[in-house]
Length: 189
Image 1 (cartoon, rainbow, N blue to C red):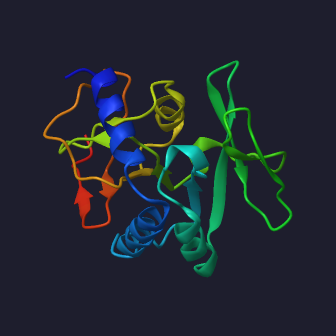
Image 2 (tube, rainbow, N blue to C red):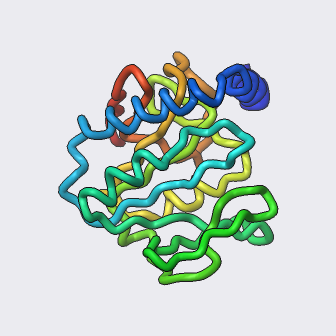
């Protein structure tokens, strides 16, 4: 199967999940995050879900990060360049939906990717080797490539892994993936 076929399958699988079930699964994923050895760091990057895409609701992970007094960084996509900036989320940060309905900070303190310790990564599918499949625009692969070699990449998925998915040299693999049922760990190359 190619990437396009995987994307179609996983978008359809997401569509079949009720809003109530999505909330329950998102809470289970957040609870599984507490099992990871990641809580001694300071800077955590987290995506804000696109409401109509039935992505994992990261609100519960945000609450955990806030409760642990961590610095939270959220992305702002620049569609014209294919890049993202990374903004420190503060009490006074104003979020506004982008043209793609993604909640994004209007402005704020920009953080360099090399300063980020942990990145919670959105995905459609992933495999048992930690390869992930996103929406195909490459925003996250370009961003993850700019992080330092010690940064941990943690996928968030409503589903279990595929045996293998197609990947390219520019695709950046995960070290972990959280699902409602399990924490998957992948060897970092």
